[in-house]
Length: 347
Ligand SMILES: C[S@@+](CC[C@H](N)C(=O)[O-])C[C@H]1O[C@@H](n2cnc3c(N)ncnc32)[C@H](O)[C@@H]1O
Image 1 (cartoon, rainbow, N blue to C red):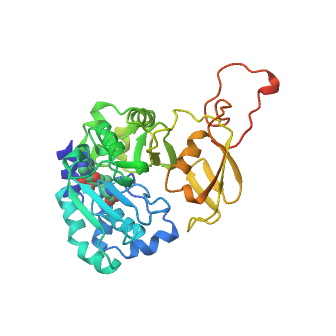
Image 2 (cartoon, rainbow, N blue to C red):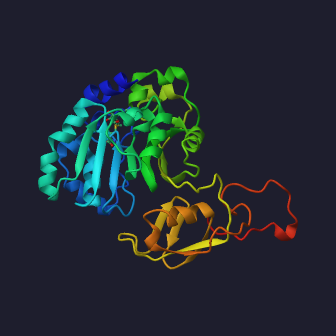
Image 3 (cartoon, helix red, strand yellow):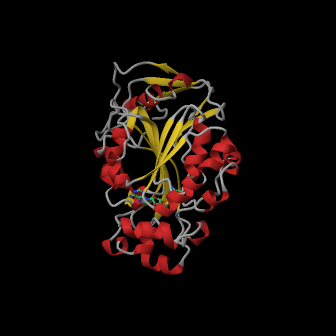
């Protein structure tokens, strides 16, 4: 599969316009604050962008970031500006032509940004142990429309777990399917290269994450993909595809379900660009100043990550009140009517 993908991204595609579906490209929801950063990036880098989402979480200054499948380097150069001079961004890609574009314009960006804080490495994301990357050394690992192309997704997830610092996160956009893809579609080089037929069934992604030690995956945003090319649509049939951004925290104490310990958080409103509301994930838009009851896992994600200084934390996990109400999992037993309504809140 590596050959097929290298050929597709190194030789078949010359620019974003050559893509045959909308799967690998989404500029429609570009936030305003990102536009000036992209304006600082070289045109050739931008023209060979094949990502499917946005991999710029909040609060990046000073962070060390690894980009898996960095391509021509658009996200690396955007993140380089967000981490600033005291941070560093490492991009890894296996396709020479893409890597050449990224490296060719490194001096241009050093000149533009006023500092040199990026490194590009040739490598396979299934074999990150062959690169000289230290365990527990990255605050954040990102990836944009790449994991679906990997023939060994389990080893990628294991390396991510190894390379992240405790409290760090894997924040990445990719393509998912509503079911497992049959082998004859996986074997189709165009469907595979277009980031469709290598996509994971979303539930298998949850299982893979859990096996790699990420017990609570958080969906940040998602959108359905349209297969506009009639020939590709005919091959795909009824399979539905989605582009989705997830965040997976490396926190050893996370549980495999949202448990209620009677805890709550208050967002201080102190993250620049988010003075009114902090979006942890699709289900947690946390308003500044409001006391928000949360499950134990959300509490830990905020308390044991770089977000901790921006929150007040109420309670601890010394008491347990059962499963957290409203988090997608219910106690299976019938309950007396008087106890049936939970405390509510947001897991
Ligand atoms: C869809 S493009 C996305 C590129 C980049 N993230 C972007 O947003 O423009 C996929 C990229 O992942 C790289 N890639 C795919 N599989 C890989 C693997 N197993 N190891 C390293 N790079 C890989 C390809 O070479 C290609 O540059």
